[in-house]
Image (tube, rainbow, N blue to C red; front, side, top):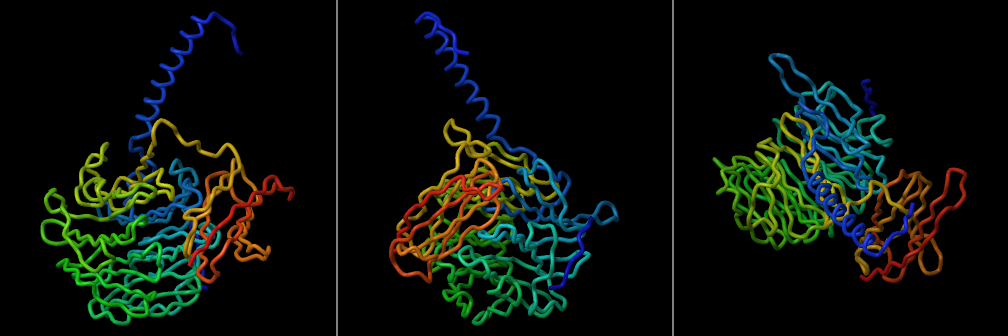
Length: 463
């Protein structure tokens, strides 16, 4: 692949005394919890102030690890180029991992999380293209053989969470738009847009359960494929302008949102039957000119967030929207990204860097690292064809997570490597496995190879 350079005491007392002490302790604890909840449920600056943020990607295994691409900006007559940055502490500090470029989109491989892809656009010190890192951003190389770049602009990039060697990429230019697909992690790409008669592709989305179903924005409408891009057809959506945002509800993939710029207000349409029919939503009554992004909060049914001239929320699947409280004071929001468990929301602004919002559930605050090693029951269970297996590590260790059949034969090797302390999850795509009972086995070893923990859980595949 074509390489890129990297810029550089317990006390006894009376019963009454104990009651008084307990009451005071309870009152103090309640006040402390309320103060902690109030303090943590606020937007916090998360670095890169003054930068124009174009894309954010959160490591699905470790929400403390965040990648950000900045777009660059002019100050007077001087252009300040964009960079790709990485944080390993939720935005407390950032390191530049690729400089003098503009990242249009960054995605992280959900199984091998050190594998990161980015699309580069104009203006940049590098040519536009798809680049890939296999070591968490330390080094990068082009991974776009087969993509035609003559006068082209980079567009959206999408990775299949069940089969992460498969990615989709859109670009456009003077000679038209092309949707490309790779099934080998970017080694080679080929066009995957048969059936399209309208272009101006600026957005793409995937059904999280059936990843052969995809949607793409075309000129004034939405196209759909049910065979992983072999053939596309129109859905009948009428949006009046170029569709720039597409999102599918991760909990209910029947729900699809599409956003187009249309006159004095954005045109937002929603389908609740996978694109068969569409209905207009209510953004046109809120005085909002543009909607730049939509994001669905994981593990929170019907909760949507929109980035516009601030952050807006909907608790009823997009029927009604309201300004998020607390707000960001009128900041223009270009991108929103959640941690995989929905505990943290990152917002990328037009000119003020990154902000972070920590969600608090009830009165308990999740520890930064787990207290014990644990293997959780997979979800969903039974499942078809994929399921998520979560595990927790209180400190670093060598992790092996393997799926076996009931005869003890290895079926899938999900994790095999060193992991830092944190909360993790792995996805098993059993599309090629037969129905039945399987065993997931987690083994955690220390630096000397001695086993510290082992546990198994049953997985039920029903096709």
